[in-house]
Image 1 (cartoon, rainbow, N blue to C red):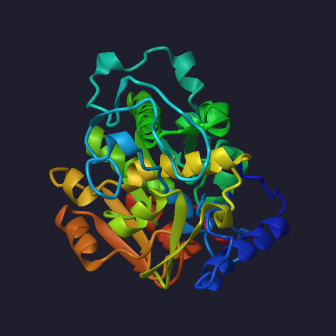
Image 2: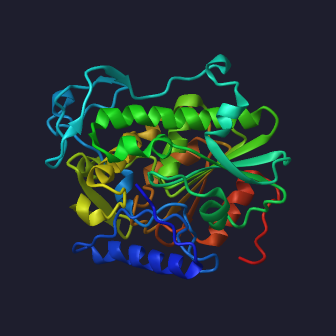
Length: 381
């Protein structure tokens, strides 16, 4: 999904207000649901700029593939490996790119010899700003999915402006669709193909994290769609970083929501709990093409379909801070069982009253807990 950056704070504020108001208007039907915001608001506008979004849509879309379905709904069973059929169908009348090969849809644990040692090749997977000599690296996993990498010196630095970049190196990592946007905008992909693509996203992220872990402390921040990417990293590669901030994600996205996306439609939440549906066209995902919109939805759903209360059941989360909004219109609020699961695994859970945009004070407090040291410059926030 192409996100067109509003570089001035005034433009960002106008964009945020337009998008955030739509979900509430859409108890009827509104077109705001999938427009993921890069900066999300001005630095002092009061609501955080969750690298991401203004509405829930793009997190959980997917396409049902007729020949691979294992239940009456037409959605494939979420196993680790599936066969992609040559005549897979998708919602709407679009043509689908297909293949007849078997694809792996979950990344297996990787040994050191599996990871690239070419530092130059690794630098192509990320952008960085701040102090490169710092012993502390904050790796940011952006929301969306978007077909462009958010600028680490503009959108990302604006969202996380409370991090002192004289003391910290800030890194953003490419996702599969930001490295090869054309692959996702020219034609519809099947749901199995987007599941396979997410393996590359997790691979890139783990490679960059291990690269910096060689001689630095590494803290990972995942916001919105990025929260799901980080959860999948934890589920497949284990708890390897020094700390994690997971913000405005879900442990277990309601099945009712991701199955809406399996029809090529979209859904969000009213007051964090009531699920509402609307068409993919109303979502306004800005992926440059209709196929791109649908593929971003399917790509996001490739992670949203997982039940992380099961996938993370044996993973300690004692160095994880998890932030959620009580009226999140994009992913919904965490349920009591989700909160109980996180706490049982050792995570610190921080809730706030509000929607998908996390207040600066909450973000700053959560970062302080994750870093476990003062590397924030928040006097001007």
